Amino acid sequence: MTATQPRNRKGQKAASRGRHPASQVPADGRGPRRVIGNATRVYVVLFLTVMALVLLGTVMVLSASAPESVADTDSAWSLFWRQLRWVGLGLVAMMVLKQVDYHRLQVFAKPLMVGSTVLLGAVFLPGLGASANGATRWLAFGGLQMQPSEVAKFGMVLFVAELLSRSTRPMSNPRITVGPIIVVTGCWCLLLLLQPHLGAILVIGTIVMSMLFLAGAPLGPLTILGSGGIVLAGLMVWITPWRRDRLFAFLDPASDPDKAGYQALQALGAISEGGWAGLGLGGSYAKYGFLPEAHTDFIFAIIAEELGLVFALGVVLGFFSIGVAGMLAAVRAPDRFGLLLGVGITTWILVQAVLNFGAVLSLLPVTGVTLPFLSFGGSSLVVTLAATGVLLNIARQGQ
Image 1: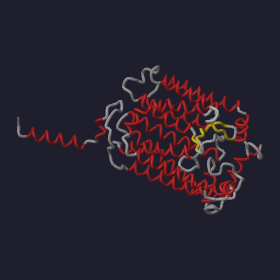
Image 2: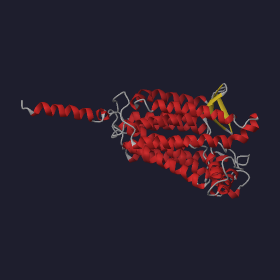
Image 3: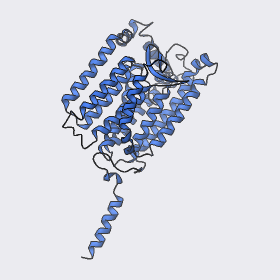
Image 4: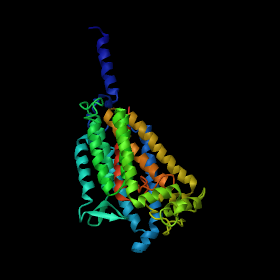
């Protein structure tokens, strides 16, 4: 043994200690069970952007919901206090999950998939399901309500990521990889079709397609799945008279200004009233009964009206930043499971934001999806923030 050998061994040990621990994670994603990594730039951008949007959303919900709160409870604060509780619960979920190694979530993939299926079907049970505006999308527990489709989005991301990251499920065999995903997606879309909830179908379908594409699924099954989704969405629109009217109103809102085109015209009017600088916080006219769902699906129009086009463009830029940072976190993940999980969560947030922006700006038909981090709503906000915590954990472990 030469004199340099012990020194080389010491150097190798030091190098192994300095090597990113995530490099020890096997290809199937079953790796360390502790938080690793530091606050990377991607992590910081994600965290600060999300916190800024949540803060803005909390303020704007107070402003946009005040007239409805006064009409319901004689207090301008009632809906705001509900939102504040959901914000607190969602932030706790995000802060906890960003500290928990995302590999631990693999054991919850199947239970969450089964549980989501049960919850999606439970909305049709008498005494459990709650209806509003002709749709049955909620479960009611005493004075609380939850929307199972929001849990299902997280469940689908986790289920697909766990399935496609297994070494025993090669993408060269679509029967055991793409097949189960098509079956689950088809069952969920059928349940969502019965509710009906076209927005959730579009979001979940896009999540599945993006994850399968990134996983290297053969183009044949992907084409079949995509074509089936388009046919299903078209059928859902065509067989539902009010949704068909919305489609035609989207093409020309002025053709039916008092019914199908009313919401789109009011949203565009609110945005134009705001101009570049806005009417000032609390100065919206549209929220006083002119714009339906002002504090939920159409809160972006109130932001543009009160804070101006410049601030509204800042919101769009915020989601663009989340998209870029989220995809960077995904591609830098230490394993395949982290890659797919990050892509699924980022796609979910971006697609939902694009559908919401498109509806408010009359660039897309109204699909009834909320704006992530900003709209009033418990299930959507809490689940989205929890998923963001997972994405932040992936960013911390990035190579």
